[in-house]
Length: 299
Image (cartoon, rainbow, N blue to C red; front, side, top):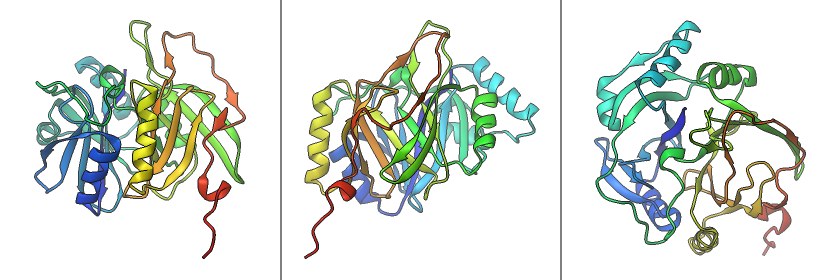
């Protein structure tokens, strides 16, 4: 089943990102990359994030297809649909995976399909996230992508990559129309998958709206919220809980001006009997944007 293996961000301020990733998020630096960037760890994998010089946006995403057969099945569907897929042994070595093929999604995001990630010989520990991150077999977390053509995105991610619909959220959020679709990796019942590994709605300013990381204990969400405030990281949505994946989380800005979600308690989907639904709200409670509900006073 495809899980979110890794993400690559092109950033304009490497030093700011390193301080933010380690001090606020609780990740650890893994190694220096050839282009002067660096990679980050969050679990048993040797690396989960690639932070490279660039224009403050998503520059690649890696989908772990599990094994050789899983990778071949996805690639066969892509090529049958007329999508160019290229094997790249050099990139596989650079990403520290066994085999890698690349293509682009309908919005032009470099998409890497692989299996066999390198695992670290050292256990991951974070000095600021004692409970650790809920990742490993479930994947890095989830990502919410910009989509300029929902039908094309649906065909690519559902019909070709193999994701399955979890549910929709259709509502208005502080004057903004919301129409989001959420997707999970298929499960045969032997192992659960996240409620959603992927979501998309309409077009965004950047290639992604946010990426999500989940921690093992609720208290670590509160402490991360405090760290973000103390580091003057702009909070975009206060603590709250979603109705669909049940995640208790907050949202804030990265140094690259796209968002991250930091949460706990995400719902898992186990088996093939999932029923989809449409929710009429973003959250059961919370997730208010401070800039709207508590704007700063003018001096």
